Structure formats: C-alpha cells, structure tokens
Amino acid sequence: MRERFELNDAPLFGIAGNKATVTSWDRLQWHVDVRPNAHWQIFVEFEDVRAPAKDVITPVDENPLDLRLAFITYVDSFWAAR
Image (cartoon, helix red, strand yellow):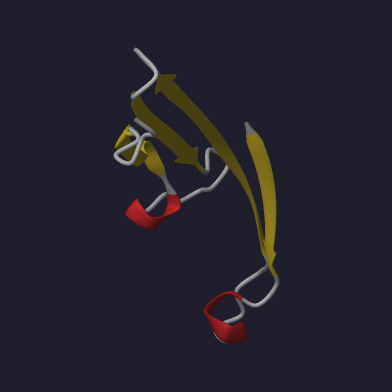
C-alpha cells in the first residue's frame, strides 16, 4: 500500500482565481506468483488507485481494480549435457 499527497497551487494555470488543491491518493497493489513445478511460473499483479478526498472525481483520478502485469514463463534446458 502506498499513500501519495499532491499540492496543485496553480489549477487552470493560475487563471480564474482558482484556489490551491490538495489531493490524497491511495494505491494498493498485490500479486499472485504460482510455480506449479520447476518449469512453469504464472504471475499476475493487480492495482487499485483512488483519490477519495477529491471533490470531483474523474476517470483519470481513479483506477479501481486494474490488471497491471501478467505473464507465464516456461524454463527448460535445451542443451543439457548428455
């Protein structure tokens, strides 16, 4: 889990008299790493990012339950000594 704080002291590039905004971001990442035998590996990583304290939440402000990374690996020796 990771927390991040942002301060934007010039929203809309400082025009229209907008006041500064402070945003808190909550990020949670978890993964599953399965190795059923010596040759195979299955890895999946998920992420959930939200800005709960923000007044107006747009699609770019949160990313609920996203697949971040996934792969399957097969390892074997093709040139083994005989």
